[in-house]
Image (tube, rainbow, N blue to C red; front, side):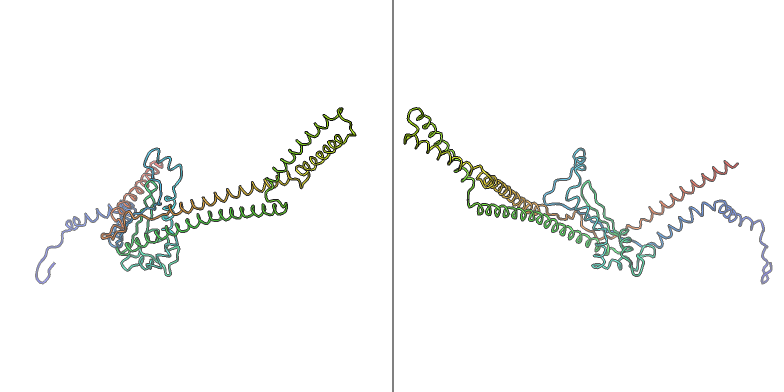
Length: 391
């Protein structure tokens, strides 16, 4: 070619072919490996591009705490002690710790955090990327709880009773504030459980004591009415006196009969002494019959009254013992409720994060690549098997 009087040599076609050969080879390799590129390379590049170029940093604040009772048995270590502890079921502090962990993942605490910290605003900071931030306007409670559950993890370890709290957000200060507020709300929850447990225990003991007091009062009223209706303040003493009287009359009657029997055949029956003794015998027989009838006669006899009186006395003693037991139980419940107060022990307080730990880009991308390679390998083996079987 002649340009401005300079003669340049024409391009060599062989050289052009040599230059195009690597491109052609690359294209040929791409056509041959197109499935591998589409299924493994391209998704891996997209995932890596998102996490390394688009995904925003997230900062995690972590805290450890445990719920203890004022008087709690130590946690069993290992071996037989741990097995026996597990068979006995969770202790009160373990149950309360699990309830606090459950509370920290509930609608209630999300609502409290929203009111105190504007949780929605903190989960949609400007630096948050599109795929990581909280969407929706307005945000429904269910959607907020779902996003909150992804950002906040509460794990309870039954072996040592420690609860781990992990809060992740797009700013270090946000994670720190949320973790601190969660700990404070957890402590408030434990305090509320203390108050409710204390009131429930005392209310039950107080109700039992009140029922016992009413039982004592009813038995006393019944006993008083009985004494008033019978006109006898001590039917038991009256019964004993009546028994003594009947016994004395019976002895006198026996003596009189013996005397009368001794007179028979010695003195005449119409003698004044015999007649007087005979009359005395009949009078004693009448008295013994009358007093015996009063002692163990019909429904108004002393024996019947004494039975009713003894029944009322037994009821009164039972009510008194029940009252003593209820009073002791009330005092014991009050002392026990005061001793079993729960409290939160902060083992590791919430930290202020400095370095972003999430998303774990390297781990995620490597997991995706390995997963895609595994899927590709399985698919390749299946297709190869089908082709071999078809051939």
